[in-house]
Image 1 (cartoon, rainbow over the protein chains, first blue to last red):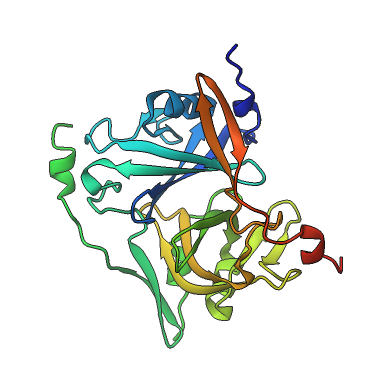
Image 2: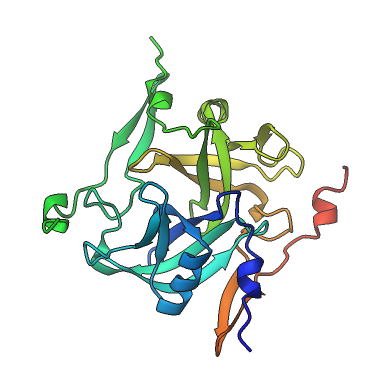
Length: 135
Length: 135
């Protein structure tokens, strides 16, 4: 018998969501943070690719469905209080961010004598227009 | 003049919070996910240790204030849409989780013929009672 107890053990918030971190399985680089609902987590397991819940579009979001840059699931982990998921993935195409960078965390805080700023450091690997050119 | 524009660039949610991922700077292991408000992020920069906002206790939370297992800030990053922070840290004592494990993400999803479960795999490095023994 197939049970869904593993889904019941997740501590979904009032909106039925949990945070999900995607991490490059090979390099350890943190790629992005997104959200999942119960259906998206189940689909992630069944399809072995990352499926999120888009809070802005209010729909399931198969990462890479437009760009082809899907995230193949390697490992899925749950944290101690059950409200955060860690996906270790193979990032197809090497680009997770819609800006054309590998990781969404491309801004680094630098502090020069009390003047802090977010410095954009990581290279754009592909022009976003060519990633989503058909839209 | 010291400006706080870097704090204004963060996309605080309706509760004034953003998610914060802590990652071991040396190994790349994702240690935990927590939340920050404006004050905690500013304190993190100023004190060079991770300061979170505890949603359950509704107060600032200097990680390690009870256990001594602080997180020394190595690098702080912001994601593309500004609502998630990545802290690369040196985890003092090598234990981030209140269960005595290195990482809070110690449960791994295993799927055996349609029966999925969260398997507890990572070792307890220290008895939690000895971590918080004085409380």
